[in-house]
Amino acid sequence: MSLISALAFFGLLTLLLVGLEIMFTYATQGFAFGFSANRGVVERSPLGLRMQRTYQNQVESAAYGVPVLAAGAFAGLQGTGVEIAALLFVVGRAAFAVLYLSGIPFIRVPAFLIGTLSTLYIAYALFTLGAI
Image (cartoon, one colour):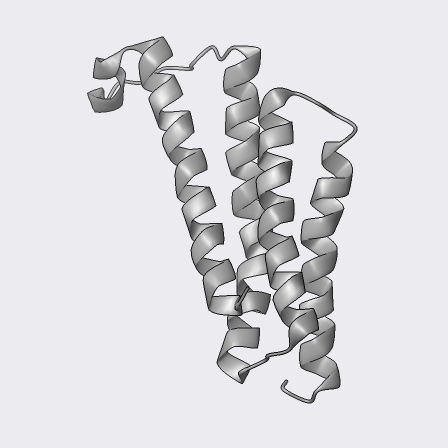
C-alpha cells in the first residue's frame, strides 16, 4: 500500500469512527441533542464510552502517524518494506478500533503495537535513507 493510500484509509477510518460516535449519541440522546446549545453532561453507557475512547485514541495516533506517513510520501519513500509498513499501519489501527469497540482488552495491545511499530519503521527508513 502506498503512503498516500495509507493516509487516505487512515482518514476514512477516523471519519468512520467519529460518525459512529455521533450516530450512537443521537440514538441514545435524541436527535435534538445535536442541535442543542445547552448540552449538559452526557451519561454514557459502557459502549458509548468505548466509542468515545476509540475515536480519541485514533485522533491521538494521528499525532504520530500522519506526520510520518506524510513525510514519507513527500520524500518519495518507496519500497516493499515501506509499503508493507503502511499497510500494517492501517490494518493495525483498524484492528485496534474494532477490538477496542468490542471491549476485548488483551488482544488489542498487539494491534496497537503493529500500528505503532510500522510507523517507527517508516520513520527509520526516512532517517536511514537521508530523506530527513
